[in-house]
Amino acid sequence: MQEFRAIVSGRVQMVMYRDFAQRHARRFGVVGTVRNLPDGTVEVVAQGEKTALEKFLRDLHAGPLLAKVREVQVAWCDPGHRFDSFDIVQ
Image 1 (cartoon, rainbow, N blue to C red):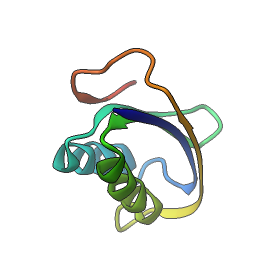
Image 2: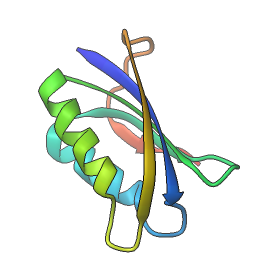
Image 3: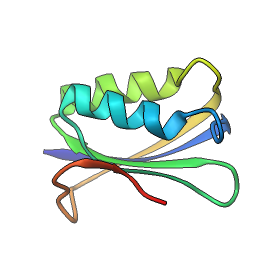
Image 4: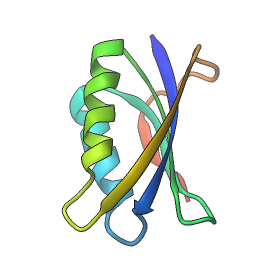
């Protein structure tokens, strides 16, 4: 089990980015959270097997159709709090 925290910047709010992240996380069996941040970026905290996380991260770089991802800053770490599902946090 591994974990990363990613900050996604660009046009990523109001374009269904969080829904996209949740659907793709569930597809890869990844757990964690996604939320909008006040500065216009999106934060993703994800836990899972390394290969699943790498595939998920690749999709985060692409984003949904209306998004324009400019940058994804990723920090890998040891899992802290263990998540049971992948949820959109308000």
